[in-house]
Image (cartoon, rainbow, N blue to C red):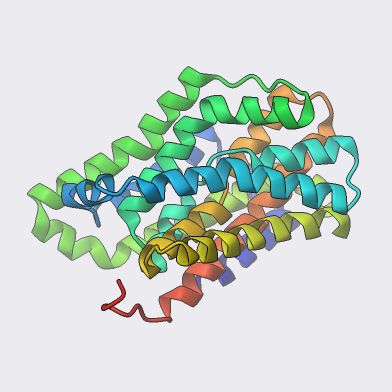
Length: 302
């Protein structure tokens, strides 16, 4: 029911944005950390060792994130006749790193969570130089990025909770086994609160965004997910890795894009695509996750 909760929380945030005013930056960060911790306790160091022995998949997903997605965003924006400010915001969504909720969706979809975490970390670190570079190349606009701030946030919100979860799994296996059934619930609730909080902050622009903006952003996440699945499959990657790459490619860190647009793009309209993207990104990722959860993986091909 993950997609249903996403829709309900989005609708709630659009109708009564004031209800989420209490969910400040501190809570936002804590919810992301809780999401990462709920994933961390399902992992072991061996998972990461296995992933590190096959860097090809990480490289391919990095290329999908920072080559295919920005080009797709620009093409869809031009095709739908977006204004320069909205096009700038659209390209920014395509040029940012993978979102942290992708790790939860990969877990639900029976993908490779360790690989997903590694890919999210790689694209997040890559955002320090790739996002400003792409925005300058495509838009001619320099987007300053606080490299130290991003690195610090990545450590606090992604790597530290996952390391803590893995440590608990290693040294307190009985405790972890007891709480494991509730970790997906914690992850889903955290994601719903993050989506609702982001939507509530910009509810008015989302409500005013017409179909000309909704459609290209929906297509960006859907087409990104499809290419992210079928291209790896066609080039010899297994089902688990292909599912992981599809979700990683489709789900962008739209809340981070909104922050960048707010801080570094002159026109207010440039923020709107990121705000709309938060909803479609969460819906697309959660739909993929739920559909794949009920499609068994052939162990022989795994």
